[in-house]
Image 1 (tube, one colour):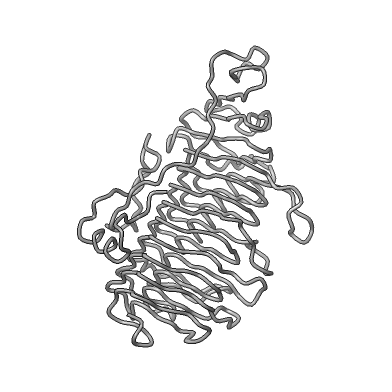
Image 2 (cartoon, helix red, strand yellow; image 1 turned 45 degrees about the vertical axis):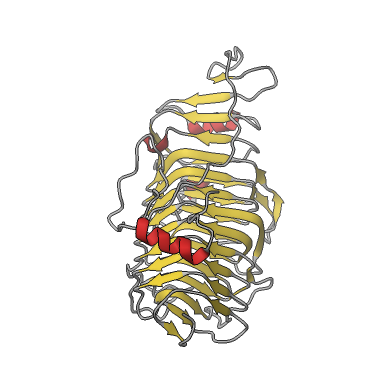
Amino acid sequence: MTPLFTSTRPRTRLAAALLASAATVPTLLAAAPVPASPFAVASPTFPTAPAPTVARPNLTRPDAARPNATRPNAAGPNVHRVQPGASVQAAVDAARPGDVVELAAGNYPGSVTIATDGVTLRGQGNRSVLVPDPADHSACAAAGNGLCVTGVADDRGMPVRPVSGAVVESLAVTGFAKNGIAAAVTDKLTVHQVASHDNGLQGISVEMSTRTVLTENEARDNGQAGIFVANWFDRKGGALETRGTQVSANRLTGNRIGLQLRRVRDLTATGNLASGNCGGIFVVGDDGVPRAGSLSVTNNVVRANNRYCEPNPRLDSVQGTGILLTGTEDVVVSENLVTDHSGTSPMSGGIVLYPSVVGAPNARAVVTDNILLDNLPVDLADLDQRNGSSFMTNSCRTSQPAGHC
């Protein structure tokens, strides 16, 4: 993807972004932009990352055997077109690997489950909206979720058969009791240009999944994380090797946590905007083995995440935290712009290294080439002060202990 800052030297390109603000925040769902969050604040801007490559069929003639689908040839993919009032789930159930289910503009009551490899669900941007239906008694709806992409796991939570290659793009999911999008046991899932807002837990939740691409989405005003990537939400255990999951160019506002990466490894979070949440970007681990970490948080804009959120059994109160590492190892935090945080939580500050809920410290973090401005009580805090973490060429005014700026 296009980097957030494009000059040749890390600190120079961050400074250039501050002075010039020359790019634009990702253009999400261009057909009809989502209204601005009441928590959104003005922020430096950055270029839209290129969308992931998604195969789109060249439709040339009707499919006589299936009146609601078209396909280019006998072996090619079908496009199942769904109008408001028709069943999205019926179209998804009829789709074969490689098929596209395309939603017209309108509201679509009810939850949807994708359990077939290689199916694309595509809408018309913010004009195609999945909303709850009290009459829906499917498993996805009963769990409180809007869109489920669900593979098969055993009783221990280990993947048996992942759903592979599903794509969800250009639609909105809103008002569900738990997760807007709930993906579990998937491989090569892409979620692109989706607006997930006003859901009770996560905007987009991805559990026990590998090689995921989450790009150019907007997650706002959700009860927990805007985007949540984890081994499992409700289990402990060792961190999951995500095999190169990418979280890029997303806009995360008004949530408890903008982006939460919990008990995962081998992941990149880059070019995201986290603003107006209680906390911006959290990388969370514990004493499980393998430990959370071996991932990078780079080139993000993290600004004024100053809402107050009450403590819960897993985490203390959250307010005014930009980027938090807790109970991790080998995490690289570099070339981020972190500004305007203030709070009374023990984790408040610009970039904060903090022991986990079970007291596990961070190990061997590399915090380098970040710009931190106007964060209180400090721009940069190492509350572990041990286990080989390093702080190099960060531009900031205050640190704990002194000397990390």
